[in-house]
Image (cartoon, rainbow, N blue to C red; front, top):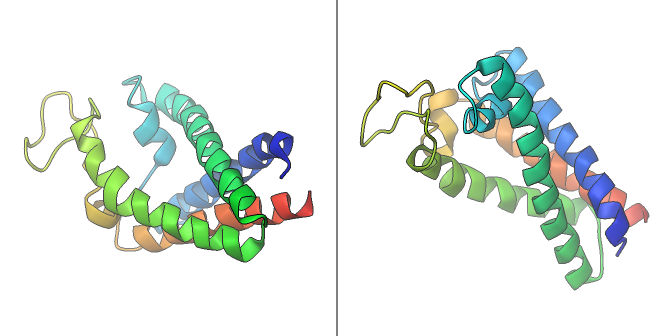
Length: 158
């Protein structure tokens, strides 16, 4: 396994995933703005939040890319279809565990249990992030499959 390559390839895959999500948002397919959601963890200003959130997402994507690379190494193979399969697992965890838990730690996100507070600026994503639109799960699934496929292809080529 090309351990030096995972960092560069992780940046490429994460940037691709983020571009797919942003393009889908601009096309009106989802209201989920990952850079805004992540960035408002550290700042209230929406413009600064989007910039900070993009870099937070890149860092998180690097962590996941390392996990994908480690899985490929354990299996002694990296393929596009294995990457796509890992992307499917990745998005399943994101949509059913990570995003629904976000209101519990996000200082600017409303919660279904606690309700909106004076500092809540974002609505909670809910299960499968459906609060951000009915097409949001499909967009997220496609974006994460693309992420895994890109990593599988790039690491396979090394």
